[in-house]
Image (cartoon, rainbow, N blue to C red; front, side, top):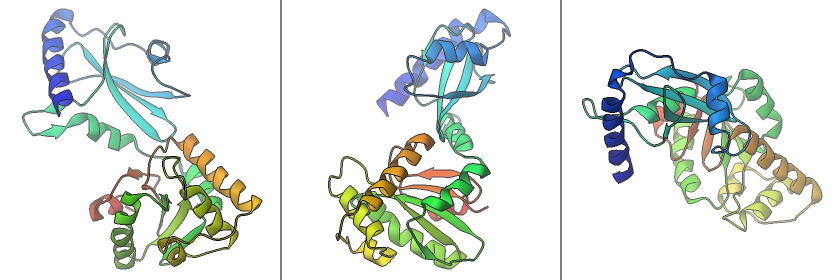
Length: 246
């Protein structure tokens, strides 16, 4: 919170500093990419660069690393970067977070590609409505998500397609994931913490899941991707899940 308040103060000061700069255009996408390429690891695309309506002299920049959007702010010459949350004190909104949510989406071609990575399913199979659930067997927030997602899927007639995504911070998660693939286990086995045999095929499959997630910019679990391509990270609410199928 201190960081957000501090940044808000910076933005207010910056607005005052640049108030006399007129209506100069924001830096081009190419200029932005060149300016920040050393600050953002890996490949990224510059999605939008637009002037902030309520803060003169400051531009909003949206870049994407895989499916993950990053929102930050630059001056009109592209010489300075402000990173953090822009808060509206008038209506108590996190404007940065709202913009990130707008861009948390993948293409329909990538959604179709996810089907071959599915390790197990639960919910209403063949209903025509589905989401993908990237989960780690030892992730506490994934465990907390399970009853929420199960109840929501049952209520809304949705198929949940599970992609095992063990994080390196959980050393047993990778072999557990491999066991589930090798022994062709179900969602119920997953929830029980199944640990069985290891096989090369299973190791390759789980590794391919990790490579997929890295390409999509998934760096934590749980992460959900909807049939509409929208992405939701973290412990979901029913409203969050509804947005994945609407």
